[in-house]
Amino acid sequence: MKTMVQDLTLYLGVLRRVGYTMTVGMMKGNEREKLHQLYQFYSKKTNGEDITPEDPYILPKTDVFELLHNDIAKYEGVYECGFGHTTEFELKVISNLVKELQPKTIFEIGTFQGRTTLNLALNSGEDTKIVTLDLPEDNLDEAKYKVEEGEVRYIKKSRSGERFLEHPLRSKITQVFGDSATFDFSPYRKSMDLIFIDGSHAYDYVVNDTLKALEMVRPGGVILWHDYTNWEGVRRALNEFFQGDARFKKLKHIGGTSIALLETK
Image 1 (tube, rainbow, N blue to C red):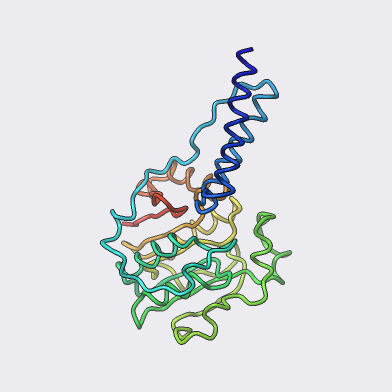
Image 2 (spheres, one colour):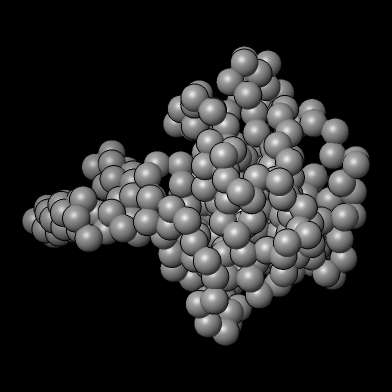
């Protein structure tokens, strides 16, 4: 009887989570992940396994108000938050960080439609140079590592960077193409003030892109990762770096977003 009550309670909890996630919770990036965890937990319980779910997000949290003084950024397309994009709030956090830090050089791994790229350009100085790297659709089958199945649609798009291609700030942005696992990053070594990693979310690519970012970032520069709370490959890679590599001891998760941040020495 006790087991039946426990299972019923858990089942009702899953239903409640479904209702929340499909309504108000859809605005929060980590709700789908929480729902997935509950389903996994319930499935294991019904198979006779005694599993206690653990919080997989181990990075210390910072808050946007610890990083920014106020909302001073400019925006374009901030409310357009479809699949593959940063959320409205995440884009505001990134834009305000750029406005505050005023980096002279920025490297972005993963262009997609160029929405974030454009807002990096809007909030940086007139002489800031932005480089954005994207994997062309034609190179997908030749990629060194396997990408996640759910992100193939972000690679197969009509035009990479379409948001900024006809924009007046296009002159600040240099588009480069290739597989980040084999791309030659050597021209950018130790020269980037800010790096934004939002390419493939597969574990091998996150590890690769992170190590390449460390080679490019200048001392005192900042590295940002998107989707720490949304993709298992990102979370696993960053958790491992945080726990096992002293260079990542200051790695933090920005509360209310899926963004992780590292201020380098």
